[in-house]
Length: 291
Length: 137
Ligand SMILES: [Zn+2]
View (tube, rainbow over the protein chains, first blue to last red):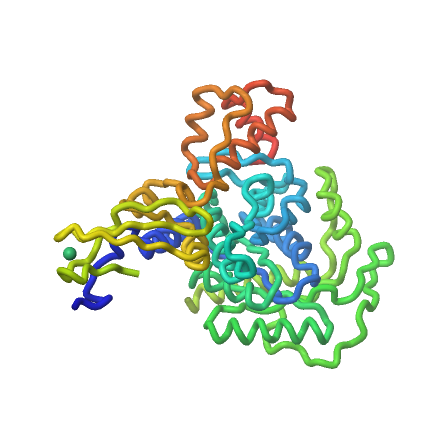
């Protein structure tokens, strides 16, 4: 009797071919993007979304063409922070057009796409087992959305990853070999521990991790132009990963993000941000040479 | 998963598949040589495994998917096309047709919502251009 490997194809549905085609569509949509940079942390509540927005704006100030993809399917966070929440999904040249802030920073929130459309609730036929397939389902949806967008040509696409060590790793693997990662951490023992675990998992998978940005490195007092301490000094040592920059918590930046960035609002960058951006660009250029 | 006809050792072909009902997919395989048929009935776990991949099931599914068919069509009714809630011009519908099936229902809803907010009673290409202008698209 024939064995599995003697039989060509799967009898008609071509499931493997379809999954491959989905991947190819995603890769093709991103073909004009020079650097796909995943911003991950593993740990939630480290101010990753705000920091990603700040990085995006900083790259724009250097004249780079930049977009942010908010890969968290559970909330329209980045679009909301950019004040682009009401932007409709309009056909562009070869897919959906990217909504842009006045400074030209493009923002796509998966959450705002799914809001009102189908939620990711799985049919409740296998009660208790949903979690088994949820990750696959979320990544598939993300892939299909990425493939549906007219990214055009971009210098940098920043992907704001959902929290979670395993999720960071799954996204890095799913989005393919050409992505690079930047890990965001905060100076606490817990955060450093979680991010260290993320880093170890990513390295096992041979993902390219460019460096770390330490967020909430103090509290930025704008009026006095001073950085005040925010956390007690952590006991745990720093991660063995190049430090791209240290950015203090900037209440004004947080307030503008919360308020959906009113169109007339301008904000000078918090200390450390511009340096982090310069170091990121250098690391990207170096990674390009190595690749 | 592949199916082999035990009677004549020929790989079986997917004859037809029915969308998931109560968490189960029914797929009928037929032997192209002796026409022997069998039915595969998936359990809810197996159904989830397939649906979470966003693929189409059924004869010629790969071709339909390649042609831009909605991966969930016939699988899950969640992305079902809702009827238009306001008039659309021919040109606006043509433009909408150019974007992938997967995002079309959501795009349609969001454009209608935008048109209403801007006080239009019809979706035209001008409405889409207005949105593109407003949001730098
Ligand atoms: Zn047979």
